[in-house]
Length: 271
Image (cartoon, rainbow, N blue to C red; front, side):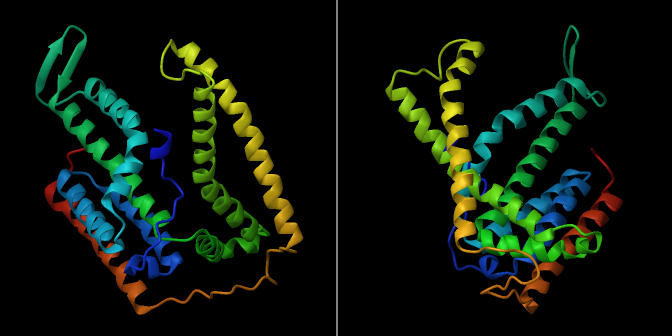
């Protein structure tokens, strides 16, 4: 399960999505998330799913990478589905066992929410799969630059966000190595009660925290040795430039958002 977490990983490629301006990709990701939450029926949700599948196909990132990123959230999806099935009333009654009642609206809501969560995770994954951390940092800094009026250190904020995202795969690999080392010493993480499993994780968490602090110190020391400074005086080797193709891609998602609004208006609200 640990190895299935792919948050923050970059998939090297030469697709149209990889070449897009990172600022536009962030805006499109936010717009697509808004689009997902605007969906009020299965037809509008189908439209967002089609747009997402088309974006994945254009990115040339294997679908197995996205399915792999979904494995860790399966318990969350199932839990959300169960809550909606048993606690959402209305519609036709499908099953009644004492105080438990399953209705058609509860089932529809459960399926709708599960699809919505899956689309959210997959859409967010495209951004990290197709954008290198340095470009992501520059893009966040550019987009948040208006906050400088309020004397907010935008560069520091962007660097912190990107480093946190960048070190997730590193910490996952470190966790897996520590767990394998503990298993070789006879540790059991799969059997026993919940309390016993939690207790077995202590020998994993302590070395992991020590390793995380050591990596943070080494990174800070390396940045100081290279005389790293952020802010206005810092130059960039690669300058971001918006192209016509970036605006064309953005217009597709804007059109998709308009389509979702029209579908909700003319086909009604189901959820």
